[in-house]
Image (cartoon, rainbow, N blue to C red; front, side, top):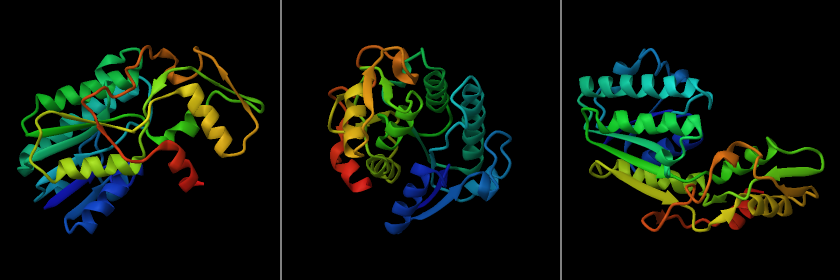
Length: 246
């Protein structure tokens, strides 16, 4: 199969290209550095020529109101170019329960992207994942100082990016779902406890202070960041990943 990976040079996209190539598929990354501009549509027709499947893992450069414009423009351009190219399957990577967190503008933007895909001209699949292990430390650093890390007790069920890649590749190389597959890590944590586990693994002496006003996930209530019973659980545990990563 020929698969074009939009956002193919990022954290997820580069791993998707590698895995597809290793499995014998023709996987082509498409990103600004390969001459593709999702917002203007420049380079898309050339990139999608002869493609069976488009995998869209491109991310908005910001998480503010501009992300709404990014996902509206990029998804609209991609669906139109895919239709012109005769693409038979459009796959996007989204977020578990993305439509249940209207407090976060980025989640609203991703929910809009899903809606455009659902109502588009091409058979589709949506892979919804929970938060990546790789983003835990950046989340912590945004609300930390020399002695403390402030985190809310939000319930979270994080997943290794490599496990997300496996899910995306599996969905993209099979018939379109015309629906959603949810994937999540095997364990549910409270974010403040996850911070403590992370600091301990780094032998970092700072203290985690539970602060339900701190950081981006402070706006999230209940357990909407956890996957629920219908999700496929990935094999990698956070503590094991921490040991492997460091």
